[in-house]
Image 1 (cartoon, rainbow, N blue to C red):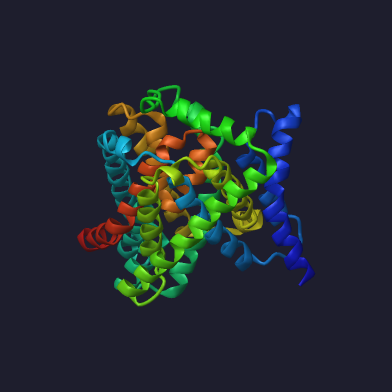
Image 2: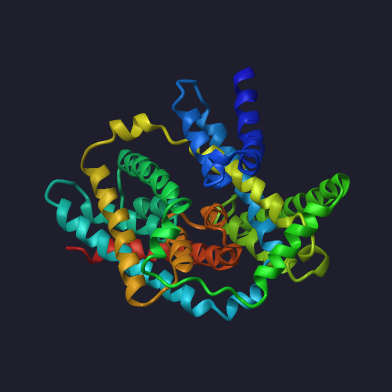
Length: 376
């Protein structure tokens, strides 16, 4: 029991230390707090201490479920709609990239791997939607349970590596050949003023604003969960996220909620908790032990899709931040949008990123099944 409490306290409190180090230590000045938290989590995962991975899974789910509506409270949904065209194009290019890489992997491994068509379909589902899509496609195609477990394990390993890339070197690297993101009018001043206003608040007022933001997020949970149970008969992750996203956007039209100065600082701290917990699930021993055609199959699909998406983005002149966030939406789904947006320092891509992630949940099953049935 004591070890469980220590693990919970580490994940919940280390983000505060990361923020302190960022502001006080020259050594950490070039690292964002989200990178510090992720690396610390990895250090914990590989320290030799027995960890409860189920606990960290729960923390990631709760922290991101709270962060999504809080992030959306201060968003400007109508401004994003005026820029939706480029986001949809980038996401569509990501879908094309996954379909091509999945087909290429199928051709490479079909002679050595049973059910290669079904595996290609499952990976198409997960990299255009999310893990629920991979599971649904696998069930529909009669895939063996052990195959799903191995694919999911490979996805976790590769996903951890890509997440670190996204929050660290992806933005400067893509900036070498992709255009810069064009911020909507006045949004930079808006975020700056809100941050300054929160910093100037007395401690008690800060606590009141944080409590209000968290309380509103919790209130959103009930109708979102009820909607999921009404539609599916159970708490379904995609429908629940759709619910909290819709209600978070709706709440952003209420002036009192949109002007809560603690919205982003609160969400940012939740994202740091998420990043620490995700890092604590990255066991490097699993990477060293991973082998076999299924691991390679997954790598060809995921990394092939990422590279092709970047190449297509360069051809169509997609800006770097839009490409990063739509790649995140495809590879991970909505849950990682907030952490990656925080990692690249652009709050304006949160709404479009979550929207594309939800779109992926909707189309992932269709794309995965269609590809599996088309492949010879």
